[in-house]
Length: 182
Length: 394
Image 1: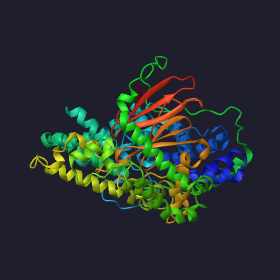
Image 2: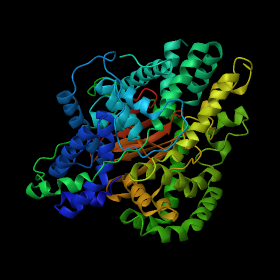
Image 3: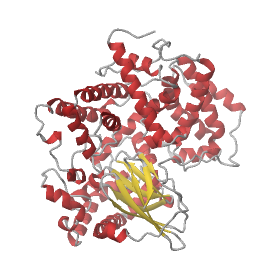
Image 4: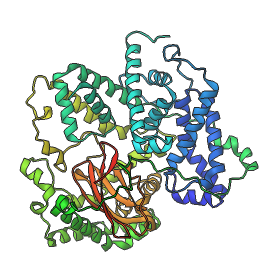
């Protein structure tokens, strides 16, 4: 993801290196924010905040953790805060499935479900399930990497992921059967 | 096996976390439980849909938009670094409850000795190209030319060394199950010349890594669907085998294989999309592949920094049967990576500098044994179980 030399230079105070580093992680940060918050403007705001925090805190990063999990930890925490601030508490049944006006790089892949339906279904998941799904599928993280990013035990990560897929399967099946509740 | 248990297997299958034996158990269950088979199909569709989610890009550069703000703030100094907790499996029981380990020799026996010898041979071969390895550790991209030159030499050396060594497939205990099973597809494991060639031949692996890492690194192009494709194909295979299971319950896919097949190295492992590459990256190999693009190279270097940054690396590493996983001692704790280089398990225990951490053997495709000799002479043995994601003290 990001070359260790670049990280070291950024930590040593090389501002250009730090800006380059921010540019490199920007797409990954935005992708997580977008799929977690399901809203372009919220994703932009959360990404900005995350990048500023990386800029400020780069000196505190230690090599013991993977840089990508450190970054994702920052952005998911901000997304969770944003979600708490902006989203009203609604149950799965009450929440309408709304497809966001995101800038997808459209690729036609033949799958059983349309991407917009999956995105809408993800939006109905509880926040902790959603973050696990996003890190697993949008960032290609392993159980251990997700655990490191979210500061959760691996078994909890698995449990969230399994339940999330189960819920998505039910939601999408309902959708296929003739529309979404709510 | 009950339906809820099989459901967990299905879920783990979707995360490429299933041993071949568990996979067979699952498929056999589908043969007599259409509900589970249907559920599996739906979960697989969900997972495929999630994998196919399109890449998204910010409508405008976020960094550009915050540059003026960044000019006004200064990065904080690292007075007191915030440590990230090392995640991983739980340690079983109290660490104070340490017992002297006495049964290791009985347990590991000859297999351990032979495997250690193999690892030693493999490493000594790498030392044969140590100049390349050093270059790689300093700058992977600069070393690419040198690595290319030494590629053929390395293979020759390996073949020669293997021929000279007393290790033959028949003498490698872990090969016995494969030999007994008489499986044509079971390849010799780890110590055999054919497999060793795979360790040096990075072309196939390099191609896979290019796709995989490009998926992570490039933000402007497609989301790397090609990297996912092999997995889809394999899943299709499995699904079709499931579909035919009720009619042909006696086929190989429905569980006629012996349990030992799990241990048969080189056996096809559909849950692992890169199983076909079968090789883990080694320092010299990274430099061998000049077909990698610049970005992919740097990500390779980054991804395998544990191997490249010589100062932090204990060279002892041990591949699992079938080369699905590679265990290594990094920074005095055991880390297991999959063939794509991602960490699948990290030991929660970090040993002190004076302690000797030695990887003993893979008990099977998902359980690794290792021993630690502490500076005070105490000896402990641990087992990492990837299926349970736990580390157990024996």
